[in-house]
Amino acid sequence: CCENFQPLMKHQSGGAEADAEQFDKIADSKGCGDSSKGPKSPRMESQEGKVRQLTRRADFFASRARYADALPLVDQALLLEPNRPELHLGRGQCLMQLDKLEEALTSFEAALRLDSQCISAQRNKALLLAKQRRWHDAILSFREALSVE
Image (cartoon, rainbow, N blue to C red):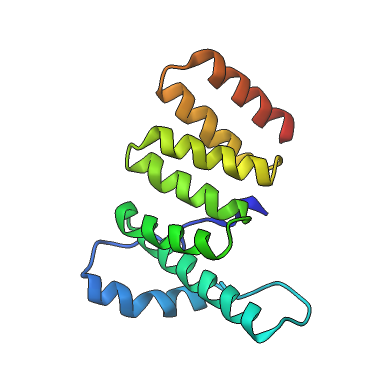
């Protein structure tokens, strides 16, 4: 589901070393394990594990409003698994927070191409269009989001 890219927790700002040491413990305590079923090849498991690790780190940084740190991690995950809409959503959210609106819009649209029912991508797209004062497009995007909900 596209809605899986969520910050893990709220946290006061701390040092980068403390963040790097704590994120695995926090992610594990929040139940961020692999919920997929079925046998997998060792290579596939390794790739999924790497993507999971990258997204957990990205979530950790995003939860601390460190979007510039989160973005390259999401980009690395997308190189491994470009067909995951939640990764495009997360990339768009980071870019939107960094005020890179055109790139964010492209990411939200990529998420929607992969999962047309991704409400978060549709809603974020609508908010971004409104922020750009593209009122007609924003209204259409909000209507689309409401029709999915």
